[in-house]
Image 1 (cartoon, one colour):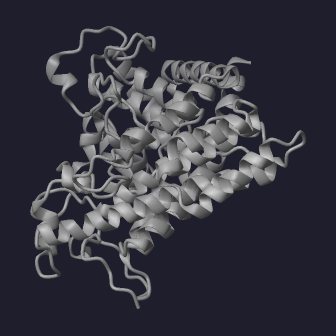
Image 2 (cartoon, one colour):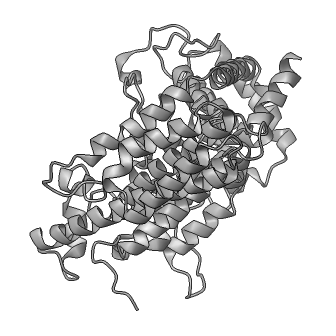
Image 3 (cartoon, one colour):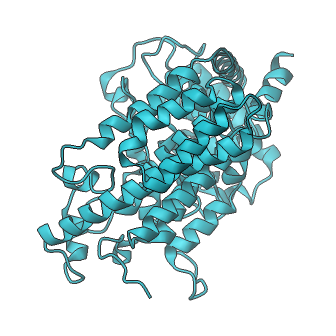
Length: 479
């Protein structure tokens, strides 16, 4: 039996928003998180969401679900090699993209623009239409959109199978889901709605529920994207086999094992044939890229973690204190799981940045992808305008969530809408009737926060859509 790394996430600091029901003794907290994510509706919808290319155009291109499964497998491999908590790693990996939008990152970007008070993209009659919002209102955690933050919102609020705390996941799983990607864009405007979930990702006595398993998933996400973007580029014709060989050799040759170098030679030989075997080439390319990156990150991370244990004198007795008293932003924490050794000047991390840049140049700006992005953003913008102009078109569950979120501002019927349990004691006909009366009064008033809540409700609904559902909704609304 293997010894667990003392830097694994401390289960002594696990918490949930609501007390969890009793479960079989052979399932730990992180296993329950994993299973709740796998069986939720948001996870199933990932099958219909774009990774890079529009879903349904080619059976062999990745969608958001296949990407998620690949991230989980790569992350499990790394965590197991480092003796970290594999169950937590898998839970984070499976949940990390629950909040992704239709049409990939293009959908994410347009929703962020719409949810900004100073954006050039305006929804008519919305509270953001005129740029005259008071400073104190702009500081409230209600603006912006980002898929990793939305993943936590989905798991903690929008999924309702486990009471009034969404899936009621642990603080460690939620923290990892939120932090697999940065909390801000390169050019942030006013993205602050993640602050709403501070209590969901904290540990007792202060601090955040960070873990090395979270950083493993973040790196596995990058590795998965690198290798499947190469595959998609090849199948779409955006990159030739020879160009793929060139990219792999230029960036990975110095850290490649001898067996993988031999595989690269096979790739070159395969690609030089007039009628080369594409399936064989794709298999070899994936194997070389994933093997090389995983092997190197395990090698470096293992040494970094051992150094950290020794340098900080961490043992089973004081490990809980270490996690509570250490900030995840510290460089020696953030850089422990990575492609470089502490204090070494190899700077493989910097070199690897050219890997996705090379792919992005060829794929993300290809005519097919650019057309899809523009079309997706147009559809989302038009859907948002239609729903805000006439929110009665929203589904029952969206209307119900809106009524719960605004109950304190609802002088007439707000007392009915305590939580989701109260909703299911009412008919949706009654809920819609009371909503219509409430919204008429809101439209005539200056209730900024209620109108902003409607913006978030619409944003949640659109973000949950698959590509094809969004297209179908657009066609129903606009013909």
